[in-house]
Length: 188
Image (cartoon, rainbow, N blue to C red):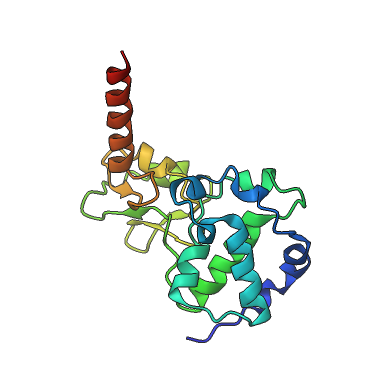
């Protein structure tokens, strides 16, 4: 796969402004779930910088790391250099998708067998990432999806879900609730 990351050049000043202080990951929900440096917004900025300069070869692993983001903007709100981290991540994600890499890490998915085509997901998606395809089946654009889960929470048939491993899938949230209730019962 060949990739052209020249479209990311417009972010070069912001990537150079980033002082790699680490304030960005103090409030990052992904870093809290996976406390590895490679899961921080700072690491994503370094990966994008490496792609832009050519010091880093694109790969599926790089695409996965960059696309693991919930676009909550906690990193931006905590950034002392005011770097638009989520905008940079979204454009890098788009460039990687265009190059043929899968970028659906935190994106929602639709189970066509369960979908009743009520289009609730389309109407509640603030990122406008869910649209009907030519057959009328709602489809999630993994580049545009911000992984907020509103579509999954509002789907009356349970046809939309998020992937396990990020602490936001129905089963992970159910287990977290049960664990919390058990701990609360043991305290008394």
